[in-house]
Amino acid sequence: MLDKKRRAISPYVSVILLTVIVMIARAIIYHYSVLAVDSYYKRIMEKEASMLMQVSRELGMNILSSFIDNNDNVVIIVATGKLEITIDAIYLNNTPATNCLVYLSNGTSYSELVIPPASVAAIVCPTAPTANSVEVKIIHGEVQKVAVANRI
Image (cartoon, rainbow, N blue to C red; front, side, top):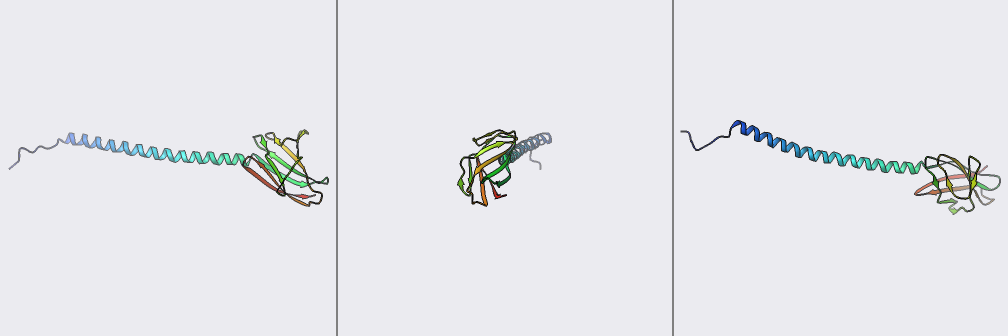
């Protein structure tokens, strides 16, 4: 015989309950996936910004040429990018260079080791008369550029 005390759930109520459960699960999954994608793109953007900073530092100044002239001076031809470059130190054969002058392409010269943006400059430093080859090291900020100057 049928048990009259038992009651069934209406199909409408079960559909509504199932829909609510699915919507809640969907909202939870969406929330966590958005967080995961957001953190992923944030890491990519931070890494890209770090790489761009490194590239801008690396491309801030380039040594185009270096040689020892007939007056026993080391001549270093450099080009700068969009930023003004302040040279912190110049080493010739791992010895700090002193009395260096900067000659800009427009004809001006000065003893400060600051090179304006988007310019070509010649840095002239005295060296020993017997040197046939000199290792040149220019340091600006955290960047270090190295070249070899030979007598011409």
